[in-house]
Image 1: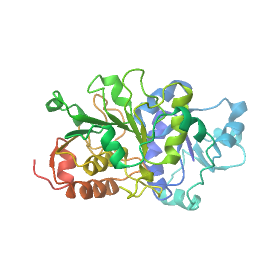
Image 2: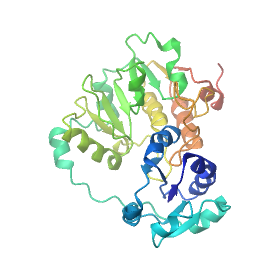
Image 3: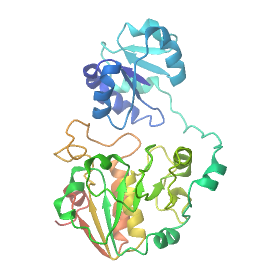
Image 4: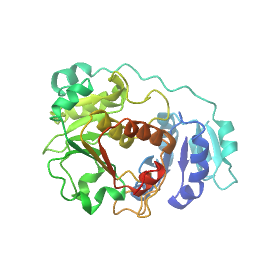
Amino acid sequence: MVLAGTPDEIGRLYKTIDTALRQRPTYQLVLAAGSGEVAELRRRYPHELVLASPYSASTKRWRRRLDAVLVIGPAALARAIGTVAFIDSSKPITSDSLTTLLPSLDLPKKPPFNGTFLIDLFGGHRLASLAYLKARLGNPRTIICLGNGPSSEDPRLADVGDATLFRVNWNWRRRGWLTAPDIVFTSDLDPPGFGRRPVIVFPTAAVGRPILLRHTMAMRPPSAGYVFLDAFDPSLADLSGPVIPTNGALMIAVAAALDPERIVIAGMDLYQHPDGRYPGDTGALGGYSREHSAEIDLSLIRAALCGFAGETTILSNNLRAALGMAG
């Protein structure tokens, strides 16, 4: 599905469309705007795919490449877009009416991946079990788990000592705060930096292999090793459906399973922190993206921490409250 228009037009309809797509989680949303407005939309919707609208002469080809089944936008776009379902964004739209236009789809089948040989040869060492991961980390005694919420920069974290540091994705690098993690849990394409290279943990092999190939071709493979969590036996989480735990929740599950003496959790603000989605960024839209949910995250985190015998310190007030834990 494509939602095209100005940032204001997209903002007016976004909640309605997001509500509809939560009933059809196998569809992807593309936001399209003028090239000068793309950066603003990417800041506002960091979890969505944002593209520049094409020139009118190439609109049909652009739509075909996206394989769009429905386009919502200004009426003037209807003629250029060609033969595809179109809704004039100036007319009333409800989430229920959108849902009826989108038939239920099975999860798309992933095509066979052709880069396995290069990854095996040059992509670093796959850590195929918790035991291998624990050994690579040096049997950590204290693990600090940092999500990307504002509480990830709690001043009480300034002196981490010899703790093992877990981080999520890569957007923390520009902040200059705790930038030498031992592990990064990610589904993003961003490559590791040229300095210290952490272990990279991917939720699934289907997500991780194409990213690893890009890292390998860029001569920046994860030399410390990499992990596909869906290959662990027993599994730490159900990663087979269209809605799965976030990398932050998976990070906590892995930390607990490694059985350290202490876990410190911060930055897991459930996308509801009063200071915004990320530290220093009040413009990004709060709330979970459609491929994740608070219920699934909290279920996994609660189960992981209930089975953890060590000491747990949670510096994220929202998470602590949601888990019913005392301050």
